[in-house]
Length: 448
Ligand code: GLU
Image (cartoon, rainbow, N blue to C red; front, side, top):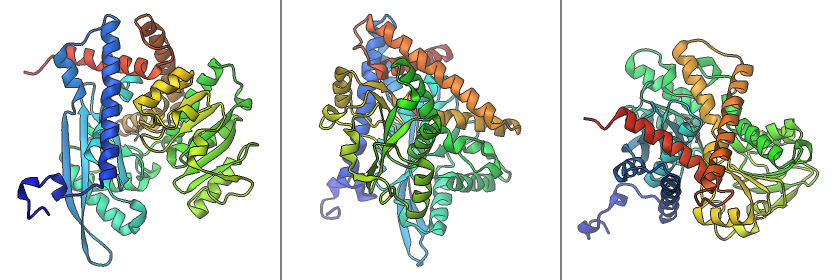
């Protein structure tokens, strides 16, 4: 087709995300922009206007890199892959954000995730800008050696943008500490000396931090604990349903279990399980280690993902991908608290419906910020070559998340006086974050 119609050659002539992936990526990016516009509008309404040009600056990514690269497969064949690294904003410090391996990764999705990282870091007030990266690949379909070669080549391709003081990647969906180790090693080999601070989420043995693996899920439960207090629901009586049982979902479940809450349902891509008495999470984690899915766990009934989202529970934690709670299924949500472990799980249309229903939404940039906060601690420890105890990590993280939580509540209360819908904590959180980045931009000045 492309050869017959040269004028129609688009970027898909070189790499071809499925139409579904393109649609999902655009949906995420449009959601990020719609959220931003709403927050900028509320800033204006509340007497904190941003100049038009500044708004344009904050809406746009600073730089975007697309890389097409070959990987030698175990059978000797060569396969082309496409990856991305997007720096959304670097005003408050080095850009920070994970690397995603997923078949549906597109530039638009990575761009949306990078923008959310900017607001997340600003909201919890750590000195970082926002970035994200990704490769369109299903890591489960690669052998360990292929995964290593892909990672080392991708790291090499984006090393133009990586730097311990400039852009610091981390894990995200489909990546893990081993992959971070290969990135660290690849970068260090290029520069000739070991540079642990170029990436976070590394194994402990090579400059990782205590508590990083658990941090995102643990952080989710730290803010859920505050939200439950606000609703006067004792932790021991709280029921929780979790969509996704990857790094975020599984450690949110484990922390909830340790805190005494009842995790009644969890799901993964293969389906879900339900037990109204509460699931034994340590045993479930063991089951998942053996079977690679939550399905088939004894003492639980099967449940679909859609049924899980509609359960009557105190807390619903979407901890999978974007665009899960939509205008179609939001009316069915019965949870009192929606704690966004994933980035962008709720569409703007669903947001409206949930706010109307009185669901207390703990927005992603607050709810899942424990991950990047622990990453920040890892980076600081690497730069100083001086390591902290897990107690120090967790207590410092809790202080940061709790402060951000109450700052968001206060901002929501303030913005309500200027027309914010009561309960729109997402817009309050983004307004706080955007204002911080805007102020930093103005103080630095526009170069030259
Ligand atoms: N990928 C995680 C996130 O979405 C962590 C990013 C980081 O630690 O830099 O927040």
